[in-house]
Image (tube, rainbow over all chains, first blue to last red; front, side):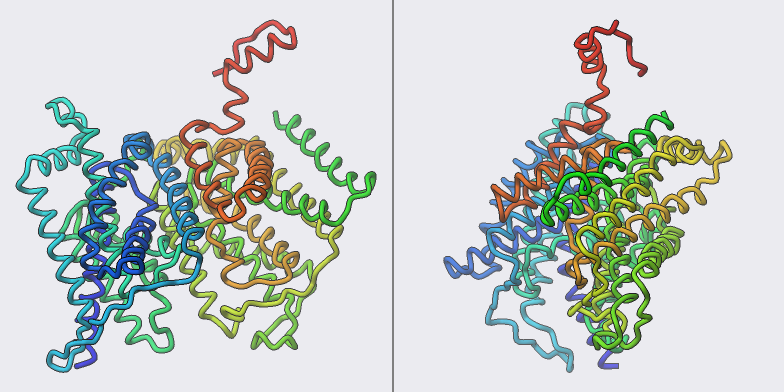
Length: 296
Length: 329
């Protein structure tokens, strides 16, 4: 019983990171129709930024968010203007290939800058708190807190502000949004900037719990895709539920299947992905856009 | 078209076969040529599924790795102490096993995955690639785990060259045959409008599966060959991240869905790699990434597309003094 509740709690804590990690991927796909294969690399860039701040100035990774997020907002804005805007509303193949190229570029840039060895940020609050015999690492609790705060802020932004309305309009119907005078290109750039900032924030936080290396991006992109398939496109509660579901499955497999440990994380999420895509192609919670013939 | 393609290809292969016999070639040059042939056959087999069928496979290198490992397990002697069980097969049987293993795996994985469309298929294949690499690392008694295997049945450089030449002749010949056959037309129909193809009575599932298995089998053969030439496999070199990217890049650069595109694309990438290796030793992957983005944006139909652009064709006709004929479409 204790093992089960420990597994569930750890699953939720792992899932909280996944949820905040996947937000940007899900929103970019939902709003722009671009599947960003370089998503995991954006997480990685955020992680390396936090490591850089930690090594040079001794800034705590959670404090570093104040720097990382604005920097990556601007970077995302520029990236959208220079590159992604050329492939938005083109066939999926084009945006897939361009972001694939971008992911290789970012990974190799980080490899030549930092080498291939895994790095991480050690913080002095990793020790677990014990609640009713269940271990809760403090740092994971902080990630959960920040993740919820970011998700809350994004929900408010989307629901309450004029900008949020424009973003939702762009996601629903681009042409109609254009006709009523919404500056779609600017909305896209802001959306991409926001998503890059959130994604990099998740990266900065994950540097405390995961080894950071130039090839960490691919598995994260795959997980982002899996969670989006589970939770639906551009939906914040979906991201949270999907993230927690994936976290629980991963932790559950690691706990209950003997002799495997956490080594099968990718295989687990892969099996989950294929299963969901085939059994419920519209997403577990509905809302995954079916790919029409003209869309491919 | 078909006859001309096959004649050109036969002449090219014959020239390549005679080359080391007529001219004295040092081992280094033979090795470089062999590596180029590996690239050509990889690009060509990726093109079967990614270009001709339009199922953009972001994990095709998984078949390369499976072929490499099948070969490694087949030929590694039990006495090497890496494996708990080893069949100790001869070279040719190992190669056949490599192709077969990859093709069978493609059939198994294709049955669910080929039902996915567009980007879903691409990402699911990326997942396949990473998941299989993980499994290979874990299944230590059968694969040697992270330490890898010594693949000992090496030929000499000249033998390597001829083995690879035979392989590449087969793969590109196969592509030329597919392109000109009924199968090629069916694939084109699937690429352009799968539902339409299905309603017209094309057995899309069967055809997609068969093509996928063919492409995978070819890639597996190359993988098996490569593991012998490399003398060694481990999860990181057999399933290296950028191999799929290179396949996609070569086919894109040459021209998706054409017979000669992947061949030209492979030569072009090889030249680019040479250039990148010599100038930006550390950043050759960055060069790959940047050139991929540029090709997609600037040369979407690849070298073949650029060569057949109406303006270029008109200019060429003028240059050789032939009356200008409007090219078809």
